Amino acid sequence: MEDVKGFIAARVAKELKDGDVVSLGIGLPTQVENYLPEGVRITLLSENGIVGEGPQPSTADASPYVVDAGGQPASVLIGGSFVDSAVSFGIIRGGHVDVAVLGALEFDEEGNLSSWIIPRKKVPGMGGAMDLVIGAKKVLIAMGHTNKGMHKILKKCTLQLTAVKAVDMIVTEMGVMVVTGNGIELLEYNPDFTIEQIQAATEAQLIISPNLKKMAV
Amino acid sequence: MAKLVPIEEAVGLIKDGDTVMIGGFMGCGNPHKVIDALVKRDAKNLMVICNDGAWPEFGVAKLITSGQVKKLIATHVGLNPEVGKKMNTGELQVELIPQGTFAERIRCGGNGSGGFLTKTGFGTIIADGKQVISIDGKEYLLELSLKADVALICGNKIDRKGNVWYRGTTRNFNVVMATAAGIVIAEADNVVELGEIEPENVATQGIFVDFILDGGNA
Image (cartoon, rainbow over all chains, first blue to last red; front, side, top):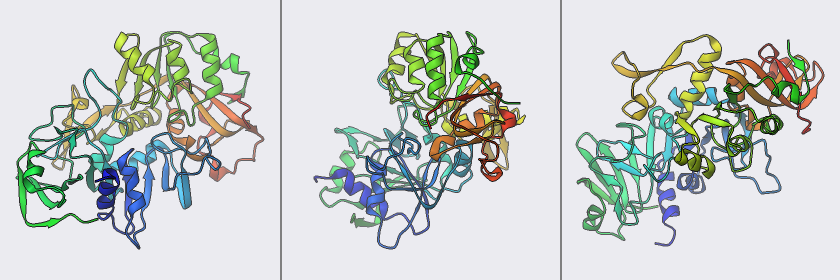
């Protein structure tokens, strides 16, 4: 597969419904916006202060006064608004965000995730991730299934947690999974891989859905 | 009442060892002229409360590079490698807080609340040493309010009473920080006459602001 990130983003986009208030994390999740299904319009929240964020402006149109949560030039749509950080995180913790799409370093069968610190290597900080995963109605993880072959979907996270039991769904280039009380259930698989290959790339024991489908974007 | 003063005079009020809140998000909404003046004045051992470390050589990053910050309380420092370097050498202590908790703790500092309850960080390292309070079967962390000696904020238009109008996403932490410090110093891209900002559009009321500086960015 050439464009793994685009493939994952396109599948995530199918989860969004018309009218959803959505937060997209930095990196891969940002691309989800490019694949919205026909007729689905969302309100994008940029947690640094935009309700109704628009597309990234061209260099000529960029304003130093309007940035996104990655500090990059951003825009606001007509009908959008600017808020301060306390209001923005009130929106987030208050349950007014329908879907949050984030990346992760590790993820485990209890729905725990780690995304903000690699000891002795990188300490970027959690930014708004801890608030988003506890506040959004639906938390969706979009990430590569492994880290260059190293397992990321584990029995138990080894890195510092971002939140406990917070994740609803996970989309990778290999499949679509949900967190159930019994573990991680594989709902859809990418036919480029066999179920055995997907399990081998996953430390946690996958529950194969009785209604297993092919992943389509 | 807010007083329009030269930058050097206001920055002169910041003492070695002060706790200083600085508004902005990745440099957007940082009071850039005040930061430059503070680097020049060389106030030392500051405890800085700012969302992030910005980008190298931009905004609050200049204070970190110049070695004036003893401790940084922030939510994200990954885009300024200098912060990581100084953490590793022990020159700089960094305390990381979830961003919503960071904003709300400051809001509490300014509105007379001792703190607030949140589910954010429950079950993580953030919960270490914190009181857990159960309400209707849900568990929350008690997060305490945060205040500072000085807050440095920035607005696009500030009138002579200190009322602030923010442009674009520059409101961010400026709004709450303006309420939570002993001395509030507001850098204006434009100092405007009374009435130029409509009452409906004042996002920080002049009663919070002590000193206005003409940043002259226009």
